[in-house]
Image: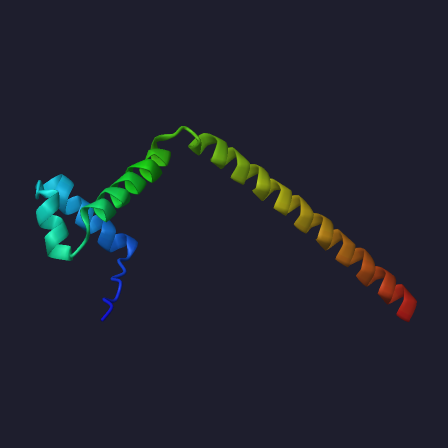
Amino acid sequence: MRNERKRYTPEQKVAILRRHHLEHVPVSHVCEEHQVHPTVFYRWQKGFFENRAAGFRQDGKAATRRQEAEAGQIAALQGKLQRKNDVLAELMEEHVA
């Protein structure tokens, strides 16, 4: 008989990693409690630390500038669309008259 694979949400994975790192519970105990193979635990840990390094990068300023530029571009396009709609409305009004 085949065992069903247990799936963990990202929040559950973080809670398991936190138990080891903050509460200093040995990996073997954490893995036994949650029925996780140590290899899986270390893979989660590696992914967690690799992805969390992105939070310390100085790309925040560039992202903010990019968002501001996009917002300006959207505003300009919305203004252009509004002018087009006004011209079309005026032309239609003249055509109907």
